[in-house]
Length: 190
Image 1 (tube, one colour):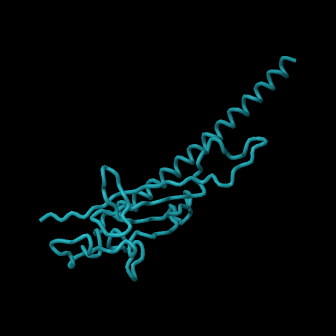
Image 2: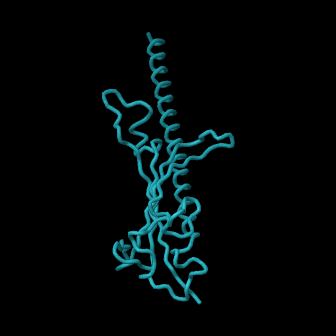
Image 3: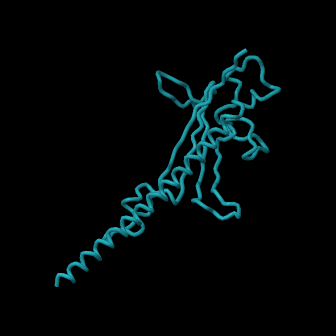
């Protein structure tokens, strides 16, 4: 009798260890997906910051003084005719960017999740320490917001592990959204 009880206890212990290992594996994958998404977003933000502030400030057009009112109108932010990512030449060309990205190995096999990237550029002004969107007139500061989603990035990977608990349905909308933004200001020092 004691042997049977010991075997049942050992079986339960093995099941608990296996469930914990599965949850930890899921947590490791989720961390990898989030780190990759963060790296992708940072790449887009840094690439945009390496561009000119506005098409007006592109050489040879860059006059000694650029008035904010002569920059691209808020409704016209986005790539100019014929410009396609990654061949943008100014910061606001990223407005409206909507693409899928993934990391692949040298054979072309996807080695991580598929990420959906969206970008929005808007003029902002700094008012009382807060960043306030400006929708009617250009300013000397633009904000780029990059949003990344993926079916592989879940909001709560511990509650919704590989299989739902008995009696609990797996929610259909548990995808998480990661949002990153940066400000880019025009400064002309002579």
